[in-house]
Length: 81
Image (tube, rainbow, N blue to C red; front, side):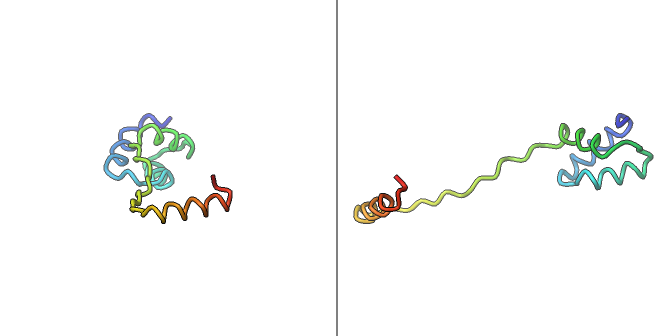
């Protein structure tokens, strides 16, 4: 049932990958689509380009020997190691 609209949906998603399923559903409903929201989102899940996983930045810092010793002692007292 979504077959006649697949080309349109692919074009829209490639041009604007962040468009929501609800927005695209409104657009194809205006073109005559009578199917469900779930059918649209299932199709979009396969078509939409995947986003890279979010990563946290790594902070690097240098410790002196006494700093490392103090952190180890604190960690041992708090039961972290």
